[in-house]
Each structure stands twice: as C-alpha cells, then as structure tokens.
Image (cartoon, rainbow, N blue to C red; front, side, top):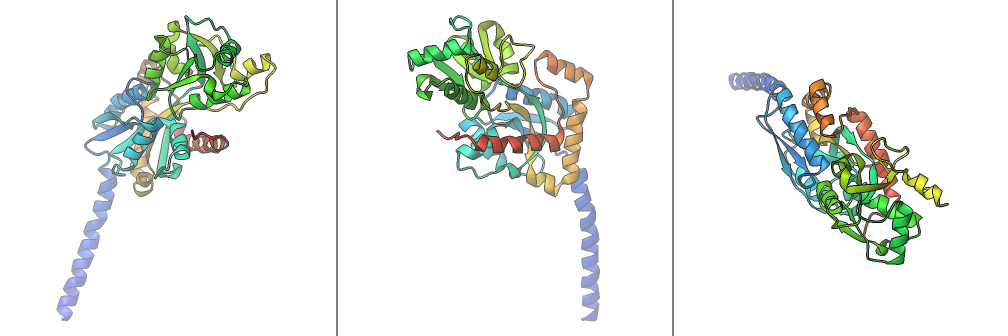
Length: 329
C-alpha cells in the first residue's frame, strides 16, 4: 500500500510538472492557425473597409491568415451576438464600428451581452456625422431642409444606419428645429456604403452619416452641417450647433460619431493576458508602419492609435450620454 501511495504521489508530481509547460505553451502558441474578424455591418461601408485593410496588414505582422466575415442586421446586434458566441480564445475579434453600435444595441435590444463582455483594443477611425443632401436638391442650409420637411410632412427621405449616432443626431436636429420625427421618411440601411449610395443616387434626399466616409461621394452631395465641436477642413459646412445658433435655436449635445476599431472577448483578455498584449502590440506596430498608414490615408481611412484604456474610456463615457436619450423606437 505504501508503495502504491508513493507511486501515486510521484505520478501526481509528474502530471503537475507536465501541465506547467502546457499552460505556458498555450500563451506562446498564440496566434492560432487562423483568425477571423467579424464585421457587424454590411460590406462596402467604412467599418468593412477598415477591417479588411487592417486584416491584410495585420496578418503579415502576426504571421497567420486573417479572414473577414460580415454579420449584418439589427444595427450591429446580429454581429455582436454572433461574435459573443464564438470561442473566446483569440481566434475571433470584432473588427467593426465598436461605437456607438454596441452601446445602442445594448440599449435598444434585450442583449445577452454588455460592454464588460468586450475588451476594446483600439478606436482607429473616429468620425463625426455629416448632414448632407443630394447635390440636385434645392436646399442650401439645414434650416431650409427642415422648413421644407415641416411644410410637406413625409415627402423628404433621409437615409441612416439603424443604431448609429447619425440616426440619433437626426432626431436631435429635428427636435431642435421643432420638426416632428414623422415629418421625414427615415430609410434605414445596414451599411454606411448603402446609405451613401442612396443619397448620391437620389433615392433619398438627405443622409446623416460619418463625414470621412462620405468623402467617397462628395461630388454628388451638398454638406449642410457637421455634428462636431469644430468645422471640418474637408467640408464647407457649419457645425450643427452653429446652424442652430444662426437660427436663434438652442444648442444640442455633441454626440461622438462612429468609431471603427477592434475588440476582443473580455474572457480572452482575462484568461490569456499575454496573448491579448501580443495583439495590442501587433496592432500598434502596424499603425506605426509609415507605408501602411500612407496607404490608409490615401483610402480616406483613419489611422489613430488610442489604445485599450482610452478607447474603453471613450466608449463607456459615451454610453452614459446615450442612456440619457431614448434610442428605442
């Protein structure tokens, strides 16, 4: 019996010793043989273009292939849910408009996830919303558009992406001008690319979308206002609050626009902190690659490095702002 006990103890020690290298190897083995980026919006939009450009360069940095899948629907909710159900081992990342879509989906739907379920890595492309009409329409100012909407309720069409800050900024502007929400025909699209194509082609009269992304259709639209603290060098338009002040109206809160970036599962960061930091370091490294950054800028894609802490801080503080508005339909 004593011999059996000694043998069992020796076996236990051998197993414990064997398990130690396995735990270390699990961290060292990351990245896996394949990584998947989930875009919670449709193809062709700014979030999709950002994700695909990042995937192409980041896979070189990590030495592993990265594929991109689109899971659109519900203003990002479908994609967020899909991502949350994928393995939290660092083989899946959410590469999409991480703000405000996640926050708004939590507020609008009975989501099974919260902000604490995501480990935000970086907000690479931060954009403000632009109010822009089709260039063939007669409206030269936002006040003119609002007056027309009030005069003929239901006639004018506005394209937005559901759950976006553009949709909320549209509501804020309508309220500020004293125009009922039902006075405009709001047409929703599952990607910014589709919503921009609609205004550029004249299917809708106006759109409220990220300003940088709208540069791709600049020749087909006329800017009316920018939902930001300061005007943009790219667009000849006043800020929304400047337009309101010019008409003797009260200012509205400046709601941060779309933030395209990358997030992991919170469980991945918690259980595999070294692997998480490898992804953080790799992402930062590619945004320090001057050739890659120049290529992104040529495509009008943002190249900002905020890092995990600042990105998380912005998203969580804006979540509190969003909670003050009823985003539910």
